[in-house]
Image 1 (cartoon, rainbow, N blue to C red):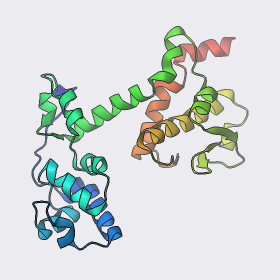
Image 2 (tube, one colour):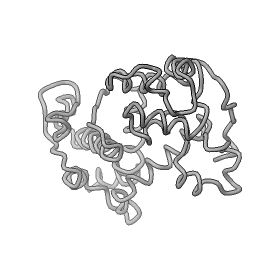
Image 3 (cartoon, rainbow, N blue to C red):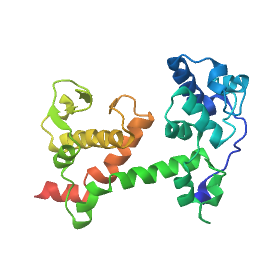
Amino acid sequence: MAAQVEWKSSGVRGRASHGPLGASLRKARERAGLSLRAAAAGTGISYSTLSRIENGLLAMPSFDTAVAVARNVGLDEREALRLAGWLAPPGSAELADPGLKRALSGLRLSPGAVRALRQVHLRELASEFSAGLGAGRPVDVRLAAKQLGLALMASCRSEAGFANDGESYRIPAVAGDSQMAQRLWSAHGVAHQLIAHDSRTVPVCRPQERASVAEREATYVTSRVLVPAAPLVLQRRLV
């Protein structure tokens, strides 16, 4: 994995690279009613530096500074570190082996390494639901949904989506009477729910936004573990 990663400098990059962290810090600071001076107090950086970070013009200078600023403004520390591209100490210790050193610089990962590790995480996250695939058994999607506290229900609407704050998932009318189509949509909902449980967020499904990170990740989880492989699909059709 590391051999395929092209490392990018951790110095100052553009607004697109630092924007997510800066925007989150600014929202948290404003929500807390703090000035830039108050938010920067005791963090080791000036209020003007913090302003540049919030505006996406400057990278967070250090791991400790990211934690200190997050604490001042009331932003979750892990979320701040994730947005800054750093790993928490336990994670960096596990990854700092000879095969992955090229993917690490201090505690910062390249965008390519972050994507690769996220993909591995998603595969492992859903591994419990794929246990039957090795034995030639399709995943029981409805049982998976039940284990996640998700109710699957048919809908007269044309688009899939969640309701009741993620407690139920609507299978779109386009699935019709096709068992495979209903299974695919059910699996897609379960994938969103599984990812949301892991990140402690409310699941959102927007199939029309296929290029979004959320939809790509749900599709990946669905195709990897929740939908039978081609031979199993063929076998089901022959039964």
